[in-house]
Image 1 (spheres, one colour):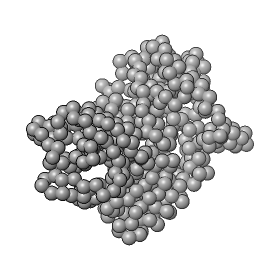
Image 2 (cartoon, rainbow, N blue to C red):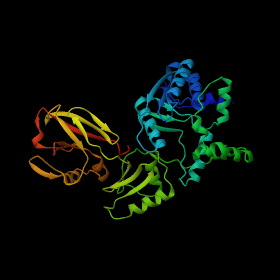
Image 3 (cartoon, rainbow, N blue to C red):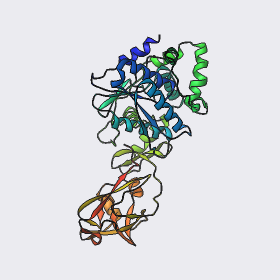
Image 4 (cartoon, rainbow, N blue to C red):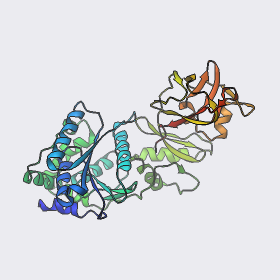
Length: 399
C-alpha cells in the first residue's frame, strides 16, 4: 500500500527540466509528499516552500521545525513570510499562498499540495451542508508559468500514515485542526468517523463521485454584457477568487444584476469581502478602512491597508522632499490643472473610477490646497521642473 504514495508522485506530468516544489506546512500530509517527491525527483529537482502566515503563536516555531526536517531530508527549502490582507483569514491566506507560488515557480515547474481523498470528501460534505454549489477539486491547474498539482487525490489519510510510519517521519500537529468549532474540523473529526463506522467506504465513495469541475478563469472583473450570466457563469467567475458562494448569495446577486443599468450592486460574500458593480462589470472587493491623515514627503513611499503611494519622476511635478498632507475625501474638493478648475467628482467620473475606489483613495494637500489626486491629476501651482508625480496602487480590489 505504501508504494502507492511514491507512485502518485511519479504520475505528475512535469517537464524533464522542471522543478517539483512541495507546498510544505510541516503537517503529516505535506511531510509525506516531500519525502515521496524527494525519492522520485532527487535533491536537484525537488524543493520545498514553507509560507509563514504568522497567524499562530507557534508560527516561528513551526517554521524552524520545517527548516530542520527539510535539511535532515536533504531538501532545499524556501521560507516566505506572508502579509495577509485584513478580513477573512482563510481567503486571505489562500490568496497569499497562490500569489507567492505564482511568483516562485518558473516555466515548466509545478507546486504540489498534499490534498487527499479524505480532504475531497470533507470539502464535498461542507459544500452540501453549507448550501454551496458543488465544485470539484482539480488535480492540475495552471498558475503563472507553471502548474499547481495534487497527486494524492486518489489516496486516503491511512495511505499517508502508513508511508510516514514506514519512513519514521516526524511532523507538526496543529492543535487548531482539532477544534470542532470550525465546520470542516467537525466534519473531519466527528461526522466522517461516525459515518465510516456504518459505511466503511463512505469517504472513498464521496471522493470518487462525479462532481462538476468549473472551468478555470482569471481573477478579473466580469463583463455583464459579454457573458451569459447564469449560476454556473457566476460560480466559475467567483471560483477564480477562491470563493464558493451560497445559493442565497447567487440568488441575491442575480436579483441585483437584473435591476436598472446604473443600479448599485453590492452582495456580501465573506467577512469583509463583497461583490460590487460598476458600469456593467462585477468586481470582487475587500472592504477598506477609513483613510487616516498623515504627513508625507514627496518621493518617499507610503502605504496602509488600502494601498501604497509611490512616486515617479517626470519633466514637471512636485519638488522632491516637499512636505504634503495626506487626507481622505470629504466632498466638494476641486483642483486646478491643465488650466481648468475641476471638481473631484468630475475627474473620477471621466476616468471611470468606481465608487468604492473613490472613497479609499488618498488626496494630497499643501496646507489647505488640494495639489494632487494620485495617478489622476496634479495642480498647476505645484509643478516644478524635474518633479515627482504620485501614483496610488490600490489593494482593496481583489485580483
